[in-house]
Image (cartoon, rainbow, N blue to C red):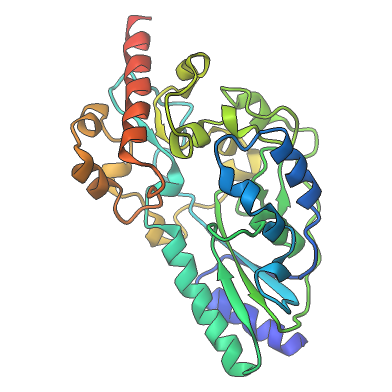
Length: 318
């Protein structure tokens, strides 16, 4: 078991993953908290989270006979435009979240995890396996934490002491028994930088996010107009938000530019608001092509542009 686990981890690192670890597959420890979160309505309009809550509670629901969860992570932190807080809408440019600057992480991580699954099956022909990258009903952050990749911070992101929180996560479920790792300890301490910096007050308490107030949710998952009392706090952000991550001391000191795949495409790096407003639906699809922004429909994107336009004009009068 130990030799196979070590070999699989080495293959994962060779595939370009920055972090890799293993946890025993059993009931998710955060499942009760998820149920409470859903009952409070803090998932907003993400109804699929209610429908998939039972599946998320245990990876064995997804892969019968699952015995191990291998979690991986890749850093997407870059050295470009390192501070969202330092930029505004006065120059007519807007903010797209860093996770969407480069190639779609779903594709990048999935193809590498699939190769790992095939390698594992070649070594153990009886092995069952399943790859999950964000879209499957799996609590990736819990499994990453239990596999020793980091801890879940007060902003609900996975934090690693070396790489910070700008990490893409994926998991490989398998019926093979692998050697588990020791979970990482929490290193947030008394720091509340992420909670204090959130412009909409989306964290009612540490490690609890109210999606209904989160700018990332409002500009990506929400459908319809943004509540009037939240619009000014959206600032220049048209797709996602990075504030609670960029103020984190662990993220601020993390290395940058580890993967060329996630280097920013020029047209998504602080684009001009007027250029985005000029896009028709076909042009919008071309603008987001190859990125992780597929969940944003054109009509919702127009809503976000209108909010940012109003913010720009308001601040121009200040």
